Amino acid sequence: MKKNIIAGCITALILTGCATSGKGTSDWYDAAVDNAAAQMALQIAAIESDTTSRVLNPVTTRRNRFSTAYCGYADWRSGFFPGSVWYLYELTGDSALVPLAEKYTEAIAEARHLTSHHDIGFIINCSYGNGRRFIKPAEYDSVLVTAARSLCTRFRPGAGIIQSWNASPGTWQASRGWTCPVIIDNMMNLELLFEAAKISGDSTLRNVAVSHANTTLREHFRPDGSCYHVIDYNPETGEVQHRMTGQGYADESSWARGQAWAIYGYTMCYRETGDRRYLDQAVKTFGFMRDHRNMPADKIPYWDMDAPDIPNEPRDASTAAIIASALYELSGFPVENAASYRAYADEIMASLASDEYTAKLGENGRFILKHSTGSIPHNSEIDVPLNYADYYYLEALKRKHDIEHRN
Image 1: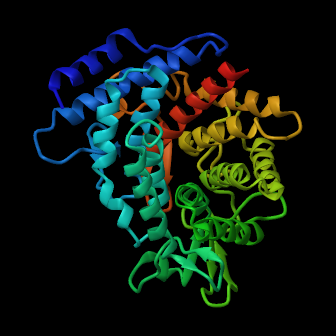
Image 2 (image 1 turned 45 degrees about the horizontal axis):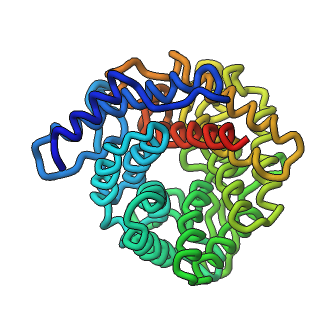
């Protein structure tokens, strides 16, 4: 790749902003895209200035909050930055971003063979799944199918689910007494299976996705629409052994990002299947979050909606971005008062685009959004930027653009 192309891309993004059109969009929209483009240009510049043979993959800031932390291909977050560059290309139309997105995507190619955890859907669908719409469709399709088959090695037919985490002796998961833990996050990995089934014609991939969605629908949710984080199954019989949390405040509390994964995951499953139960669950879980007594006025949730020190608990911008992206899609489906879902997403996005949550150029480890929370129980990534917050924020911007230029 020629350095002058990279430099030209970076300079254009920083100095001139983006080729966006304000027609039909909200007041904050163009500024949000321009800011994202400029900040990501600085991130790209840092990656491209590295003199080692590796391809840096930014995730968050280190504990000193100044330097940037990077990950390898096997990390569950490795697909988000490549996917963000693909979305930035769509938002700006800058073709110089394509070879960069291609480079960052193909740097994590080995992830398609991972069978040690369930997050291969996040990794491959967010990177290759986005890239296949623009380049190398046959090659990228092959990667998606291979990855989907790798994911299916974790399917437990007796329980009808894809096992999320291993509970090997000595792990923290095993210390909780779990045998076959399934987390609500796993709903997000099903999109890979649906896509790979369409590409390959292999109905087994789709059947696994539907089985997991149906079992999760039956076992993960409370009557008020909220969901547990972890359900531990007997993998042979499907018996539920524990309903607990891994990253929330308490087993019976409402870990905010888990609710977001449920809203997004079941909205996606409705898109892929047309099963009304999935859409109804997405609507019900969103209603739980929207109407929660502890939902802040700016619509950016606390890390857990039942955390004990609200309003002094950390917020989670990643939860907000995931919900906003899901709501833009949900608003296009047959739901009552669809415009209200779009309006709520706009409120979230206006908050995220404000100075309170959007970083100043060059700050925040060169990530777009501030104030996300990874896992307070693990004392990990508290009130920091997270690459998946940026990814879903950019996806939400893209979905908003598509809605308003389609109408």
